[in-house]
Amino acid sequence: MMMADLSTVTVLCVVGARPNFIKIAPVIEALRAEPDPLRTVLVHTGQHYDEEMADSFFRQLRIAEPEIDLGVGSGTHAAQTAEIMFRFEPVLEKVNPAAVLVVGDVNSTIACALVAAKKSIRVIHVEAGLRSYDRSMPEEVNRVLTDQISDLLFTTEKSAEQNLCREGIDKERIFFVGNVMIDTLRKHLENALPVDTTLLRNDVDPAKLLENGKGYGVVTLHRPSNVDNPRVLGRLLDVLAQVSHQLPLVFPVHPRTEARIRDGRFDFMKSQTVVCLPPLGYLEMLGLMANARLVLTDSGGIQEETTALGVPCVTMRENTERPVTETEGTNTVVGSDARRIRSVTEDILATGGKAGRVPELWDGKAATRIKEVVVRWLSEERAGLGAHRR
Ligand code: UD1
Image 1 (cartoon, rainbow, N blue to C red):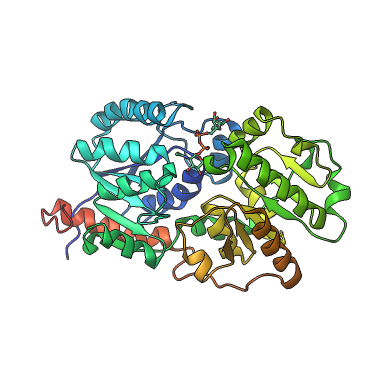
Image 2 (image 1 turned 90 degrees about the vertical axis):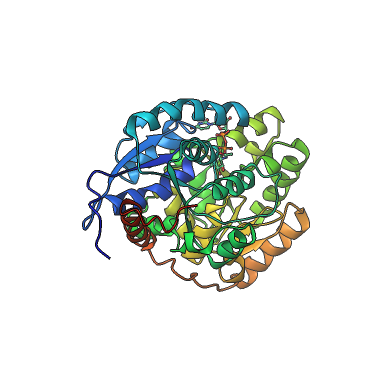
């Protein structure tokens, strides 16, 4: 097929929260690269806004300064989503892009996709089709709705296509391309940085704790279902304290979790076997995970990153929208039951955990595949063929 001239076409890319930054970096790089460079405009909604949660990621991942920053900040789900929509609409009118590209499942993803779809602007969703089948998770609602209004859907694992087809999405619009988060991981792994332990949030001696030859585990915790209910949070903090007596833990504490620990007056931060840190930069977190004996988390992305790194992961959630990390990778989903968390952790410490392998197409080239499909698709749209029109 003859390629249409795409030199005047703009793809507007959206980011808002921490995991988005990691996903968009390779996508923008690929879209802007030769051959067939596309014009891109980057909009940052400002959902995450401070040095630790946002700015350091732009710097370390060398993401170009966003052309537009909506500066929405925090709020309830409704207020945050509405504010993003309200501020995004005039941007679309000004930029008039051929397509809006959104990544992941955060409030910024659905807010911008919805504004674009209502203006009949094409929507591209990177990391489509993941399903936990748990609608109490705000991200699940964002995923289902974003996919329903997307024109082009890029998936990271085979299960995602089945989920989308079950929801009536035309197979022709779905492309299994691999995982852009792993593109970023592979690109930056050799530049990973040591953690600056002078930024401690609690009163421990990290050197004494971490240099005893035993190794360490990493903890992350931020899901509302785990941290917003003091009873659940208390139970998880207790079990983490128990685990830390066997294996010292390093815990970069998410701002939501730090606030809940403070509100609940938990004395977890007094633990002498847990190193509590502020949220880490990408390169520091990567270095920390790569050298860990295990990771305990409720994050989506970390389940994938540990699978790519071959590090055992214990997921403190009832389900995962990323089943390939369990069936092929190093992940074990354990829920929030203290006994199960302890027994799986003990098993990993005794045996080294399951071996796991890196899933299909998690090879560092997902963004290049996305670019190829987008160029072909935009050419068809330009030529009026519109094969993928809804
Ligand atoms: C959001 C995403 C979640 C993602 C997570 C990664 C949604 C629905 N959730 O959840 O999918 O896994 O980001 O972090 O979009 N805060 C700061 N500094 C910041 C940003 C936030 O201190 O730069 C504080 C906020 O004031 C708020 C808390 O952190 O109190 C939570 O932020 P919020 O954006 O509500 O959601 P997350 O829990 O981070």
